[in-house]
Amino acid sequence: MGTIKNFEDLEVWKMSRELVNLIYSDFRKGQDYSFKDQISRAGISVMNNISEGFCRSSDAEFRQFLNISKGSAGEVKSMYYIAEDQKYVTPEISIERRIRAQKLINGISSFMKYLKSGK
Image (cartoon, rainbow, N blue to C red; front, side, top):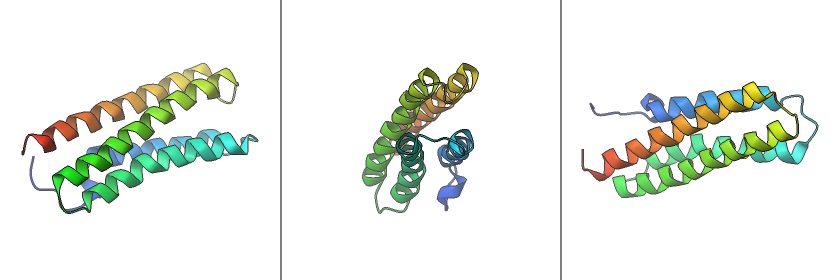
């Protein structure tokens, strides 16, 4: 992998941005404001922790922020089960979003291993 100069070039950041936009789209008209706030904040946490960690001074710090991002992606995945159970979204949407969240978790994990290996 070549040197990446901007967090916007990271594939995991791009994936997290897509997921955040889907979250906002899925719950834009939702009436459960505390649920909508929580899932939105979890999605935003994924995206922002990737960018914040990238801007830190060491790979070790970056991995710490990526770990937080991974946990937030897990929270988003879990919340889509709730959204499905409460019929806020269709089962098909819930499954697709959980798959996206899992791909993001896997991508973050791989990236963390890459950083730990010293490139």
